[in-house]
Length: 116
Length: 116
Image 1 (cartoon, rainbow over the protein chains, first blue to last red):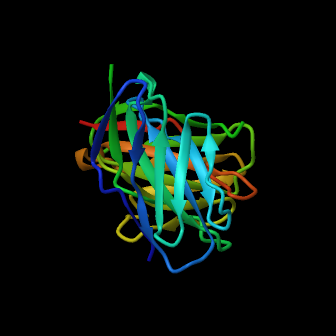
Image 2 (tube, each protein chain N blue to C red; image 1 turned 90 degrees about the vertical axis):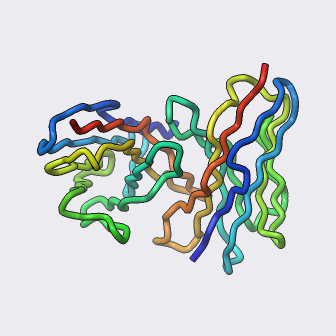
């Protein structure tokens, strides 16, 4: 079974600085999807960024980028120019590609605090 | 695009009451929806996968008679917590999967259920 591990329960960063959240996963499959979701205090789950395992290029969405290391099974999220609105719980998630296998496997989450 | 609406956002009711939560995909059709439960400061736990026109698939340990799921149309899934008790108090979140790779799940705003 696939597992996702976020080893940092909490992180903090100064406003405007850069922070990296770690995520590792375990799978025997070669093709899969990886996601980062953000959950602010409102508790809505917001998709931040997505990565397809067969794509070597790291995904980027404005100030958010990932460092996808397939061989190491690592999928870290980098937030540049941190803003107060980035404060939230961040969840890394894995999903298989196989038709019918649609579950998201979530990590434990990392609580990110932005210091003004 | 890919908006998921969940209603109600907060419900308080007496023990023994049955509570229905609705999850709607507003601008896309969702043959599959998912129901999660989240305890404070924890990750999301998948309860069941809701399939349009067929029975839901429940995760191990989830009581199907307690948590009734109906997915009668391509845009609506409902979760009914039957004879709710205080231990059923939690945050419930639904999601729906869009078509096309990488087919991310988009989440509703969640429902805070408090059983007195």
